[in-house]
Length: 261
Image: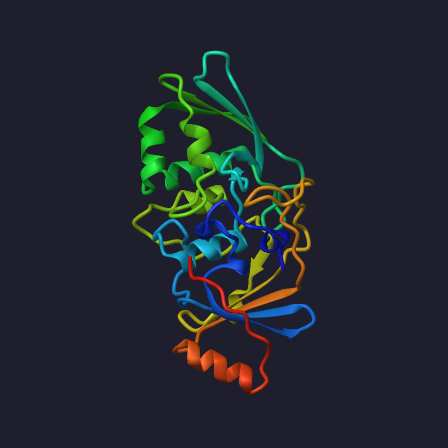
């Protein structure tokens, strides 16, 4: 599992998906976790809905530029930042080692396209967009957000933990109109989605992204290193909690109650 699961988060709704949204989970094998989720996964676009199950999926497959620690303070995640003396410009620089699940590098252009799509539908993103003057891509790893007036909205928005979290996607995917849900599952996060195992509304599988490079800092809330401790995670659905309990009694694994938010 992830180190984040061993520590309290800033809010219950901000915990990473292995720790959250399950009615029960079982350890079926040494490196596989099977989780009975609070709701079925029926889509793979974490921008189209505030449903917790999609947010949970997002944290498995994708990553965010910034993240909030257990005190609610924004911290670097995919990127670090500097602020201009006048408080209007934020320069974000991607950290080394960021790759998409297909092996290509994460770029500043990917991030700008992702923010543009996300900010069309998220309330905080819409506020940020209304105050924004421009995006400027400086190089493959650096882009600048310039606002019309001094503001701290960038750090608040880019570290938003729940609702519609600002997950980064490939530019070609992020250019999909928000009216059209994406179907690709390529992210840059700690797990890869197993398309062949996906049965919408029934089950979904994730395998450890062996190319993922965690941050070096200890996990703290949603910030710090996301260190994967298992090889595979399987999400499944059961009609009610009693069915999950019966599965436990039948010897299908040990179950631990958790919340759905």
